[in-house]
Amino acid sequence: MVDRGDPVNGDPVNIVELVDICGAMERRNLALFEGLGAVVTGGRAGSSGRLLAEACHVHAWHADLWAARRPAIPVERSHAEPNAAPARAGPSVDGDHGPVGAYRAEIDVIREMLHELAERLDWDLDPSTARVIELVVGDLRSISNRLDGRARSLSGSSRNS
Image (tube, rainbow, N blue to C red; front, side):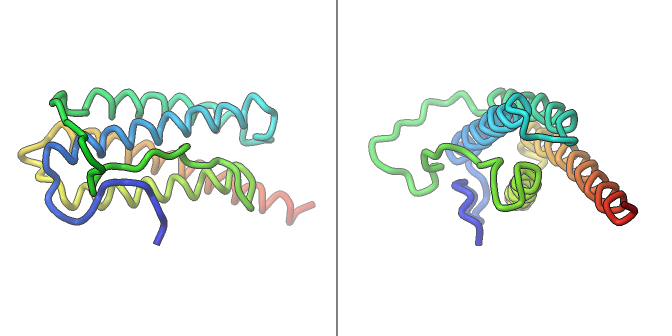
């Protein structure tokens, strides 16, 4: 099981937990924006530079969506909350398979998290969160498909060489 640092635990989502979930997703997307931006501006993106640059903008927008969705209720934290997302540096976009491989794995983790959240959400009672989930999952699916297509075309061109 992947340590995702998220508050998703299987019970129906309550308003206090939604504060934590939205905050965690905002931070995760900001970290991706910053990490991918560093890969692109640092010249480590190679032929995937344009796609990763576009993904930076998508993750900045996703961070804005989660920030806007976060319920504006005061939540006091006098002690460690069992469902609160732990502080973390954010997801890595570097790994054994380079920045693109690590980013692809991170997309899969986020999609799994959102699938679990969608299963626990009452879409009739919380259509705003449901819509954010739909938008983010759609964007991540599109990015994944583009990364997969790029990998296929690169592997095909390397076999033809």
